[in-house]
Figure 1 (tube, rainbow, N blue to C red):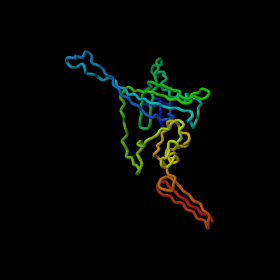
Figure 2 (cartoon, rainbow, N blue to C red):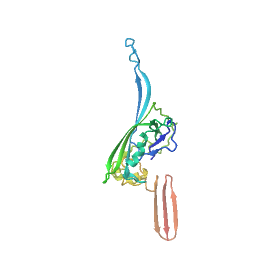
Figure 3 (cartoon, one colour):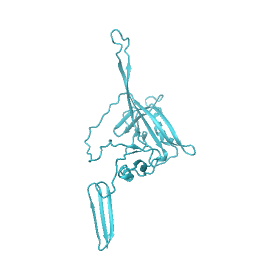
Figure 4 (tube, helix red, strand yellow):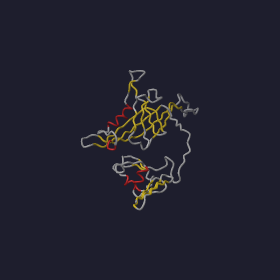
Length: 266
């Protein structure tokens, strides 16, 4: 699954900064809240009798992005750390003032680009709130959430690439239309799957889940997706071995990834 990324921009807010900070989030946010606002100005000396007092003018526009990120050191499989603040400090960096390259006597916050698939937002961090929510026996925080707001001084215009035709197999939904369920803390895939057709093994394979017993908090799972392990259309394989007179062997495969094999030895 593609993960959202925070990327440091140059002070001109035009391109990614060479050698700048780049942070891939541990868990993708559940929602993105985009707010648009215009600065409304009242006219000077409006004449109520002339019905001009209600006229308003629009000043500078702004767009804000609000999101929440989760961090959990107990869910790390690579480069584990003992304190979740070692992870969140990489995000706090984006609200830390830096020396202005044009005027070293002044400090400015770094520009940041939030990108997640086709969603791109360039701006600066306006506010950030970090909550430490789970502690180890020796008092080190192991889990944290960060609520942050980014803003830019204009009304964001969404530019989309030309829509490409998507070919969907019968019985399947196009990308982005499958309902997803979020794993709770301590929940296993077996418990989430219940009596779903295909069983939890097929759901784990379809969602590329390596450890179904330890689901990461907040992990999204498509419980309607499943991989078949039988020798039929779809992904699967079967094999048989028997002992008898002579030696023979064979292998056949059908479209859709299914395969079967037989071998007899005498």
